[in-house]
Amino acid sequence: MSGIVYLVGAGPGATDLLTLRAARLLESADIVFYDALVPDEVLLLSRNSIKFKVGKRSGRHSTAQNFINKRLADAARKHQVVVRLKGGDPMLFGRAHEEIAYLKEQRIRVEIVPGVTAALAAAAELGVSLTRRGLSRSVVFLTPRAGAGERPNEWARAALAADTVAIYMGAGEAGEISRALIAAGKPAATPAVIIENASLPERRAFHGVLAELERTAARSSGGPVLILLGEVYREAAASQIIAPWPNEHSSSLPMARAIRTGRARSSSS
Image (cartoon, rainbow, N blue to C red):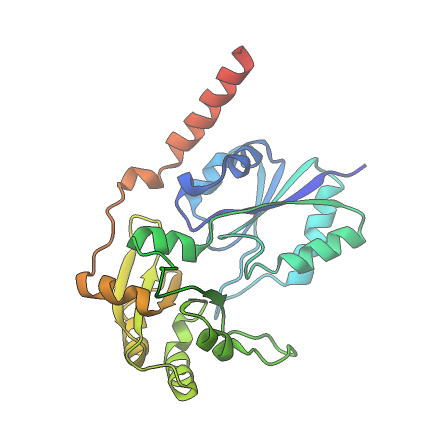
């Protein structure tokens, strides 16, 4: 007999952007393996579980993927509910395929719980749709990063083919991204927005154009960054307005209270 490993999306950071399924699994988890970017307030929903940090961040010490895979399998043989908590959505730049494949080889059941990815949170926060009739009919989520031994990453071609571009894990390479896209034919005046800490109270947005991307990205302070490119951001750059979200949205307590209240109502009905 073995437990189930749930690959759960923690969303962009704000606790109340978790799905109800994710929150309930965190409350009932026996053990949680969580990413580096998962906020402490999200982990508060899993007060009674064993927790292990297995994060990966560029330029910093990271946990080897093979080690994570084995720890998940070992945990499932000892516990009923194992949560692998990933920032954003597990199926987007989360190396979920490697964990799913390994666990299936070990005959361990895996279930996926989607999460809100950073590009969707940033779009909501800016109040700017990723698509717009007559202006943007296509969106691409990409990263310029490619691991050792991987096939060449055709990220620039993908960026040129789409009307709106969301670039993950690219802040440290903003200069290279800008030069590569301009050289490939993307206009230097393409509107660009750098979103740091999307959905959190300390969120910040920096507007510019593709030619100034490196200088714009340098204004961030080390939080998780998303780069957005496209004509849909031209009006936002002119107004530079971010929709105000109350700070209490970042608190885990209302979420936990709502879950408990919902359960109490369902059990009494």
